[in-house]
Length: 121
Length: 110
Image 1: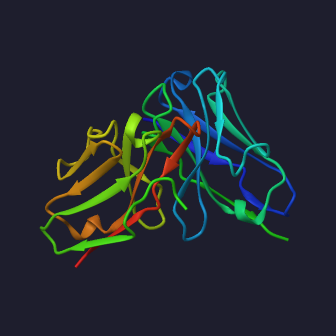
Image 2 (image 1 turned 120 degrees about the horizontal axis):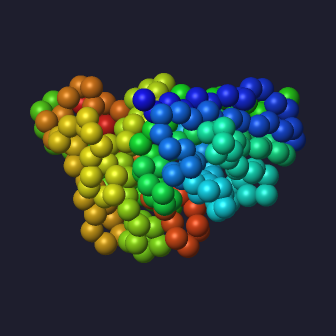
Image 3 (image 1 turned 30 degrees about the vertical axis):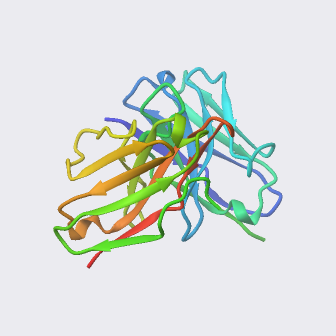
């Protein structure tokens, strides 16, 4: 059974940092593109970042470029999102998601339960 | 402002059909696969359609997807009260080298 379990969310002050983790199980982790998707309260889905199966290619939304870093540890089947210089507009539920393909297609067949990040003073 | 345009809401009576459009451009829908998601309140999105028109196992054939040029459509037939949810389209944008979602469409069963 495929499982994605996020952790690391919480309350952080503007300008602060947070690292999200997503523990994956039940599939060959290094074969698939993984992404982070967020959803601000009462708003729609926003794709944040993606990383190839090997970790050699990374992609970012313009809104987080230069502040967030996606990475993965294929030996630990874990996906990460390092978030720096956080802003109030980064407040959202963050989901990790598995693409059904080894390419970036946004065909996410499995999602985590989400972890809430709140940026506020 | 989303790169992909969806109608804010659609509605129909139980048993009827609704269609949800998703309009983009050649850099996204025109040259990449489209996926569709259903999101019930308080839950993670669920994949309904991938690769324009394929259904994951367990998704009923009441849900179907199509694509023509720079637009895609999700159709839901035999509408059930349980289909009341938000629906999103998503695809890759080759010019942005980024993923993009539509703004979402709320389906109401009258």
